[in-house]
Amino acid sequence: MAQTLKGSMTSGNPAKALVFFTLPMVFGNLFQQLYNIVDSVIVGKFVGEDALAAVGASTAVTMLFVMIANGTGIGCSIIISNLFGAQDIRRMKSAISTALWSILAFSVVLSLLGLAINTQIMELIGTPKNIFKDAADYMQIYFMGFVFLFLYNAFSAIFNALGDSKKPLVFLFLSSALNVGLDLLMVIRFHMGVRGVAWATLIAQAVSAVLSFIFLMRKLQKMPGTASSRFDAKLLKRMIIVAIPTVLQQSIVSVGMLLVQSVVNRFGSSFLAGYTAAIKLDSIAIVPMVAVGNAASTYVAQNIGAGRLSRIRQGYRICLVMVISIAVLITVPMQLAGDTMIHWFLDSDSSARAIQVGTDYLKIVSGFYFVMGMMNVSSGILRGAADMKWFLAGSLVNLTTRVVLSYTLATLTSGYVVMWANPVGWGICLIISVSRYFQGGWKKTRQEA
Image (cartoon, rainbow, N blue to C red):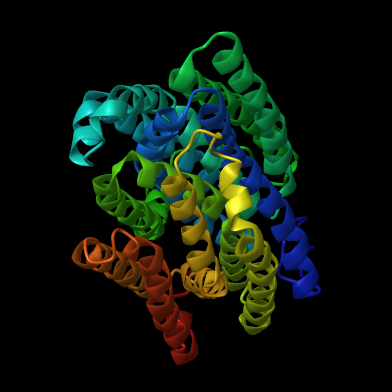
């Protein structure tokens, strides 16, 4: 039997492998969220409520493209993980090369498209007139940095596929520090406002992408097998089969946010400012549970590639315990100190309505974080097994539920339905994913290594 490669989770203690693999992913994703959090805190404190609302109006759109980038990387990494688990290093390197060239081309096309229709997007989601220009400026700069956003996410997903979740953490730590420094410099010193935080984010993402590329090339050169920059059409087809549903699922989350954002925008800038502050905190809170779900996908893909299906049930149970524990730790402080957390984002002149909306959002949604965590793990198992039809079905039902509830009950609940729609969607998606897992059909979708 061939020696197990470093980073493989196909042998040894599953709990130890998953915990040590997941922890750097959690911290890495938290640093990534720090980009947007620091933007919001600095804008809210040093520019004002309208500027925070402008960044918030852009959030649903920017998150859509972040999710597309993330989904593209994760989708490709499933095939890479599968080949890595099978120790087919030659084809794995070809898969990496094929993925990177394809993602580069895709990101350039999306960047040009985004720049062309930036204003129309802002109009489509009903951005309030008093913040329209700042929101559009933020988005324009964001679109300019698409190549760095997509490539960094691809590099990070590839490192994770190879069982190395530490490198992305180091890169993000360095770029996060740079992001904070540039935010302070451009907003406080140069008075660039919303444009300043957008440029800071772009530069920080560029640094992450360049560092990731350098270290990935070094890592691949040390692995057995001939290094290759060959483009493999057959591997591309396999990656597309997995990547498209993953991109759709990731996009569905953000499309849901985008549609809900248009509902939120109806209730004025104070409601929007409070909602924006809350979802910034929410985006940090869910990071550990999303990371566990992504780790579950890599774990399953590697073990399927190695033909060790018996380890998957163990891994599933371990991941469920992890997300439930994390959810409890996060929910308690949000329930007890939600109003204090919202004040981090809004200055003393902010309206009482903005503070109340943000606090209410945190208290309602955080009570269901355990459902969200279980949903991510269960969906991650199906994604790792390439059971994409059921994986996507759960996500579509999740989106449909959230959007229908938000649009039909928005006026009746004064906008508060958006706070309840997420937990309902999570619950239904969880039921679908768990049912499929225990039915066992995902085992028949295993890919040939």
